[in-house]
Length: 362
Image 1 (tube, rainbow, N blue to C red):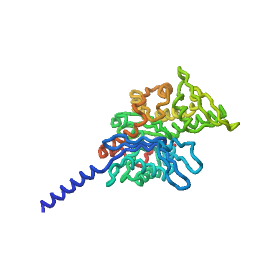
Image 2 (cartoon, one colour):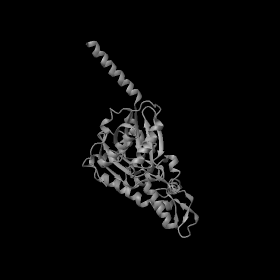
Image 3 (cartoon, rainbow, N blue to C red):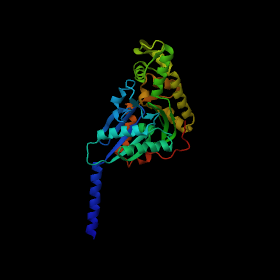
Image 4 (tube, helix red, strand yellow):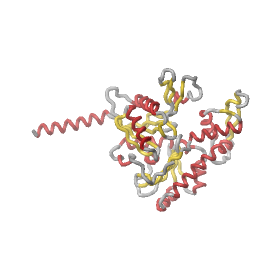
């Protein structure tokens, strides 16, 4: 009898080893602008735009990721280019599911057996319905289980910041759809806020400014190019200019103009001011001891929006606190979810639970 029990225990251990070998734990940064996937023991293997193109006549997916992004503003009437996430929240559940399924198929080298446990970064202050939609999308796409972690915590972990200490770590994640602001202490958010002003809003501001100032219509890809090449948050010593083309409002014909960096700064100034005021508001609501830590440690920036020229200098001047842009800010959240995926049992306490009263809802 004892011999049979030992054999049974040995079989269970062997089965567990086989399962551990075959399963893939993954980290996902499901962003409004880009989606990144991190595979345990391999690192970031996918970094693609969160865009899908679908044929309206047949319902078939035409392209996903980079190929779909190239089609923005260039498709015939029967093809729609969709951004399935808006302001960090799933706006098109089916397209999000298809996009995730496409990415998971790309990273699957084992066609016989699949077992994904997914750690997904989400903005703070999501409703329970919004959180459930993220979990369902991942599970329907092929993951066996989905665990959610707040993006600021994942970003801080990805930047190797000391979030476990009883001291404040303030991080501002300026992504495509949202700006997530959080003060973290002892592995949790003391206070957090998700602002629906980020990279996409900057693009909208630029499109509106060009339309009002130059009577020229441009698309989102052109606005993105303007932001990256000549955009800045503060006046620059060097003069940056970019020639762009669009449709003249009055004549309907193509026209070319030159956009300067000071014009872009004027266009996005209101949005930058809103982000600055939100950071100040969070600090004002923070316990005094943690505010002292922020003054000592400073504020950390990540996300694509943090790469805007002079943004760190603008915030440092307005908030009078040292500002640091972390290394490789575009992949911080993905790296954080990846660190959790590498040792899921050890980081299980970081997974999100029902919203706390101290959270700030927009």
